[in-house]
Image (cartoon, rainbow, N blue to C red; front, side, top):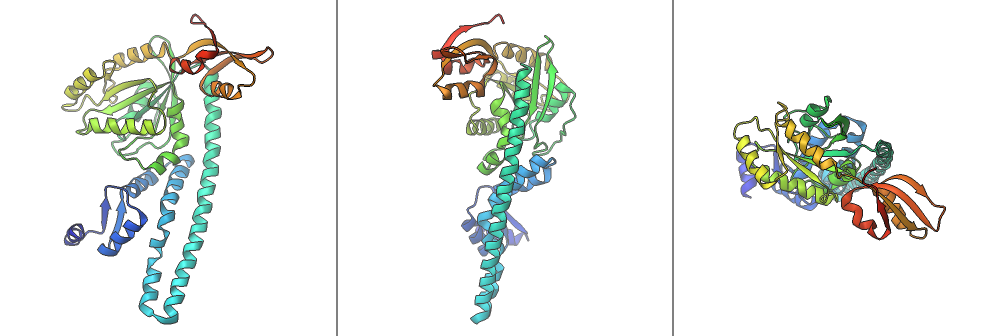
Length: 366
C-alpha cells in the first residue's frame, strides 16, 4: 500500500520490483496499483532484446522471453474477464469464454515458438561444437573473458587483438561471443573469446537460454575475470560472476583476475588492494592499454602448464571413460587394435586425476 501510494503521488506509469515475481504476485500487484508492474527479470529481458544483434542472440532472447511470458498470458487477457463481469448474464459468459479461448490459442503459439527456438539453438550449439573441434586441432589454448556487465571485457578484447567489437559504457552492450587469435610476446598463440556480461541474480532462464554462448566459458582452458575497480560495488560484482560460473559448472577453471579501469579516479588504490588479495592478479586500463606487460607475463605463465601430453590405455568395454576423454582432451593419436584402446592426448592438468587409473606415461618434452 505504501509503495502504491508513493507511485500514485509521483504520477508513475510503472512499478519495478528489484526481485522476481510469480505470475500470481504480479497480477495481485497490478490489481492493487492499477498500474503496470514488472520485475527484475522483465527489465533484464527488455534490455537484452534491445541489445540483440545477431540471429543467435535474438533466438536466445526470444526463447527466454517466451518462457517468461507463458505463465503470464492470463494477465494479458484479464480485460476480457473484467468486461464480462460487469455485463452479467450471457454476455459476461461469452466474454469470459472468448478470453479463455484466446489464452489457449496464445499458449499453443507460445509453445510452438519455444520449441522452434530450442531446435534452432540446438543447431547453433552443434555449429559451436564443430568450431571448437576445429580450434582444438590447431592445439591453440583458449581463454574466455568473463565479468560483470560493463566491466570492460569487449574493450579488453579490442585492445589485445585489434578486434572491432562494440564496446560502450552501458549494460549488456555485447550479447554475442567473438573469438580472436593473439600472439603473446613470447610467441605463444592464444584464442580469446568475449562473452555476455553477467549480473547479480541473473535469471536462471537466461542462463539456460544462453547456454550455447556460455559453453564457450565451460570449454575454455583459462578464464580471464575482468573487474571494474572504479565501481563502488566491485566486490559484490565479483561474487555475482563467481555465482554464475558455479551455476554453469566453470568455477574450477584456472582464472586470471584482471582489475580494469585504473585510469579512473580512485580506481588505482582499489586495484592495488585487490591485487594484494589475489597475488597473481594484474591491474590494467583496457581503454589506455596500461598494465599490459604484466597481463601478458601472467598469461604466459598460466599457459605453460595448460595441457599435459600423456598416453592413456582404456579397456574397450569402458565406453563412458572413452567418451569423457574425447569430450575434455585433445586426442592426438588413437589405436583400438590391441587388447586395450590406446590414446595419446593433451589434457588439462586439473582433469588428470579422472584418468589416473588409465595413465601409462607423460611426454612433457613433446
